[in-house]
Image (tube, rainbow, N blue to C red; front, top):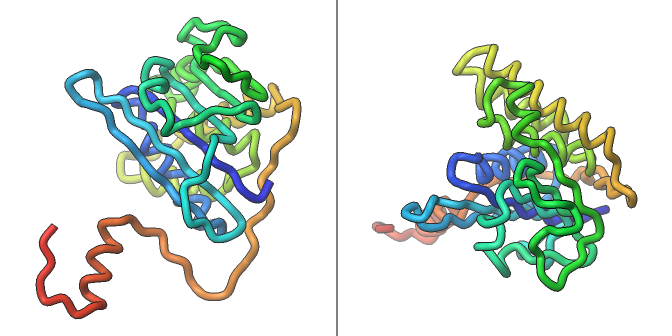
Length: 228
């Protein structure tokens, strides 16, 4: 594959957006073009969150259409985002096994995904790191294992992210990633979907967000004051 759209959703504290940010940073480091959007639900009703990441060997100008990969840590939260995370007959669906939903009973009305996996994400996280807070790292391992995306760059990013909190936290997250990756290899996709390697291009690329781009545009245009 030369283009991949991944959508993820979960409850507040599941680290869904953090996983997306780790993925896009690692992919950019490897030379992929990428775009990420993220959404947050009402904190009053639980604070569900979602993100979608599009990775490509070519320039991207939009977040893509239907998902190639859908990750649901909680079905109720995933369904709240509706059309933001559209699933089709070509989507690979990955969800938390402890939800108790059978593979042939997932709550996606009128859609028959290409492949569906119930993964013991929380169980793997606890076994690897002693806490379910490592669920997002397990998800990164699953994605790297199935789709061959930026494995080494993700591990470098995890070390950079957690090293200030100690070597043990780094090691536990590396174990969570590796166990997620191993689970994916032991349960291969029926139709392999490995991403092509990024094509080296001259010059530098920037990983940035909308806020930074607006501020930079104001500076470059000579705007003497910007409030936002």
